[in-house]
Image 1 (cartoon, rainbow, N blue to C red):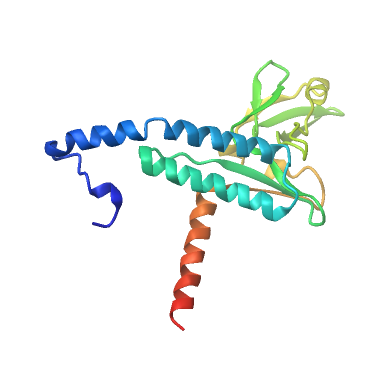
Image 2 (cartoon, helix red, strand yellow):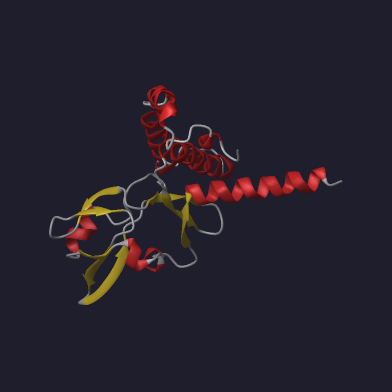
Length: 198
């Protein structure tokens, strides 16, 4: 047996009662995990951690919770985020991809984190990505969007992060909590193996 999930194989009807009892026992757990993930996302959006280590720990914890959820439900669910870095003192989560940003384009469409809008500045079209600042508010305010007649042009899947880099010297990169968690787990296992080989 390579995994705890193989112990009760659903193909065998004699295990049906045990499988039903197992499902009932963990019924509310995915919902509790979702609530914990939402709470951590809210803290990260508001830049509520005192250190970069705390921020990375929270992102990793989200990955751990998503991994637990996947093991319970079989559903693959990831939380992707943007990380803003000015190279000096400001490093924060600039939003979670696909979350509501709380602003609308000039046509009334609700914008999501990582949507790209096109607006007019001095009769020239400019494209900008919807990201959040360190307080969890959209960098492109509703006033800016209205003033420049900004309209949605593409979502993150088509755009990548290139439109997110509004400020010279600053970078915005994307990451995924579940992938980060698995990378950290693999790194830890390799370190443990090296430690045992001494």
